[in-house]
Image (cartoon, rainbow, N blue to C red; front, side):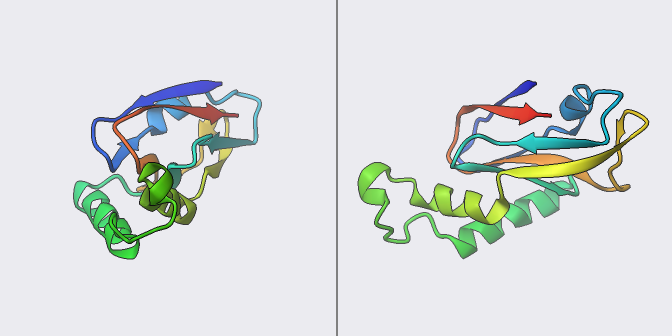
Length: 124
């Protein structure tokens, strides 16, 4: 199943937990969320505004936007590609009794690295 995500910023974190949970089949034992884009990622972590700002800052520190990357000669978004490689393109969450078996503070977070954009996530 597909899930559409709209972002307004170049780097933005969107909590998609509830939308993913709505698509979990009652007979499944795991749920995988896959991002079929090379400049976005998905992670499981806490949806706390200061932590999300820290994540954005850490990505900027690890992979600066103007890092003199060769790929920037092509389309100017090498930092977004590199950041998404660090984040990963999928997460798999156990399913128990038809619900995502996330920990108390865990959420499924889509991380846009090259927005604003309209993205599609695959949930299986």
